[in-house]
Structures are given as structure tokens and as C-alpha cells.
Length: 348
Ligand SMILES: C[S@@+](CC[C@H](N)C(=O)[O-])C[C@H]1O[C@@H](n2cnc3c(N)ncnc32)[C@H](O)[C@@H]1O
Image 1: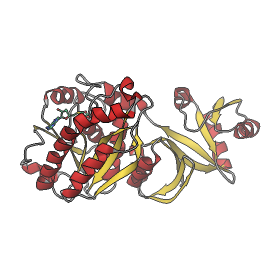
Image 2: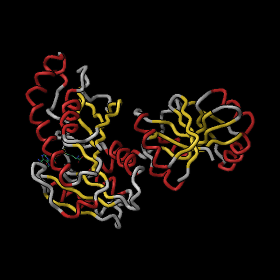
Image 3: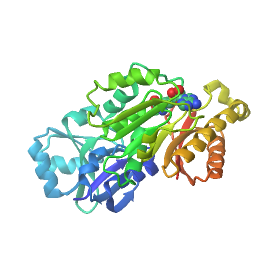
Image 4: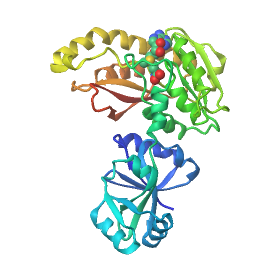
């Protein structure tokens, strides 16, 4: 079976995430990726993609579409629509750009891509934005001001790391767990989670609610403790950690009007940079002491108006001095309206 997927806006991260299913015969073409997999049972866990499906030939396509008795089919080109209408007795078709998703399609129709040499891509899954909304917004304590890690990005980061561990049930630790995004995602995937933060009051509130949520996985062990990263980590259970996935904060709030001139952005950052880097350095010094072999995947703020990634550069310097090898992604994860994006740093 050959699968195909439409990559998201961050194809580098999506392709790294794909390693979770141990893909073979990978080919990419524009924003499409084709692959076979040794772990089809893990495919449901991929979320860095927008949609995915199976590559089929014309007779499989015909059987599948006719079995569904659909009055209408969504296609990525007019030629394909005409062919389907003419040959398969489907009454109507609509053309939709491949990277777009329509709720109606998800609920009721089939979606087909024309590929090559009589091959077609039949979509079988679309990204479940409802789950992300549930994790991002459906919690008693939340704070867009201090920043929450987007659930989708967290999901991709967890997957990237799980694909590199041999642990049966990986343990994921977020030392700035805040409102709990990393831990909710990891728990939903069935993993063990360790949560810590200097202030665990909102975390406790959210955790209580999470335990009643339909996405919560009962069997995923959860350990929560209060901790300031400036202090040494001494909890013995930390030796169970396979990976740290975290984000501290996106730095000072940068408003649109402050960004008209680069100089202003520089000034805002200069005033804050020292304290940001100091906290990251303390955190990394203490993780290096307590869990020296545990990799860290973290996001750091990237000020989109500046030509230079000043925060990630400083953190990279500090981490390298401590003996970590740092690999930054070239992509910056950002939403349309944001002035500050997130760059992913992987520390080993
Ligand atoms: C932006 S929030 C993290 C949000 C979290 N990633 C999420 O998506 O829910 C930053 C967190 O860092 C915590 N924090 C700040 N200083 C800290 C310190 N010195 N030690 C541990 N946690 C700290 C704050 O309490 C806050 O919960």
C-alpha cells in the first residue's frame, strides 16, 4: 500500500514527524509526500499533515466511489472531475485546492487527487482541528497573554521524539508545563507524562478538568510537582524521562505598533534578552546535571521583523557551552497575524 499526505505549512517539521511510521520509498512533490510504512498502526498519530489517504488505481477508485453512492465528489482539478462524472456516474463534482479542507467534505463527501499514470489519491483522513481547539481552549485556566504552546506544534514535536526512542511507553517531561498543553497531548497519545512548573495552581485546575475529558487516557501515568528551574532537579523519578518537550515563554509582548521600526524591536528585546537567556541557562545547567542524556525539544521565540534570530542564537551559545549539541530547524512556526514565531531547537 502506498500512502500520500498533504504536508502542512511547516513541511520540514511534517517530514520529520513522518519518521514515526518508519516510512520507506519516500517521495515528495510540491506539498505532497508519498510513502510506504512499516508501522501502519501508527499512522493515526500523525498530525503535522493536513490530510492523508491511499494511492489507488482507476478500478479501485471506481469501486470505492461507487460503493459510497456519493452524489458529489471533490477533486483537485477540473479534468479529474470531468473524468469521474463521465465514467463513474457521479452527478457532480467540485474543485478544491488540495491544501484546503472543507467541513462538508469531511462529513459527507469523498476527496480525490489526480496523481500520475492512472493513479489517484483517495483521501481517508483530514486533520482534526476540533481536537486542537479542545486542547488549546477548552480549559478552565488559560492565558493567551503569557502564551500557550499550540497543541498542533506540540503534537508534532512529541511525535518527532517518540520516533527516536525505543521505550515501549515513552515518558515526556515539560518543566514549564503551565496550562498543560504538552502533557495533554502526550497523555492523549497514551504516554507517561511528568509535569512541573514554578506555579502549579492553574495546572492543577486544568488537570482536574482534563481527567474528565474524552481525550484523556486513563492508563497514561501522570506525575506533577512544583519546581523552579533555577533550583537543581532532585526527584528520583526523573531518571525515567525519555525526552523533555517544552516552551518557556515567547518573551516580552510585542504589539503591532511597536514593530514599525526594527530599532524599536531591538530596544524592546535588549531590555528583556538578558533575563530570558539567564533563565534558559539556569534551566539547561540544571537539566544537564540531573538528566544529562535526555534530549530537549523546545521552541524559542523568533521576532519576525528582525533579520537575525537573536534569542535562539544566545540560547544556542549557552547550551553549547554546557555541552549540548544544538540543531535548530530552519522553519519558523507562526500564525498569520503573529509578530513572534517559534523556532524549534533540538538539544542533545
Ligand atoms: C508560557 S507558560 C508555558 C505554557 C505551556 N507551555 C502551555 O502551553 O500550557 C510559561 C510557564 O513558565 C513558568 N515559569 C516561569 N518561570 C519559571 C521558573 N523559574 N521555573 C519553572 N517554571 C517557570 C510559568 O509559571 C508558566 O506557567
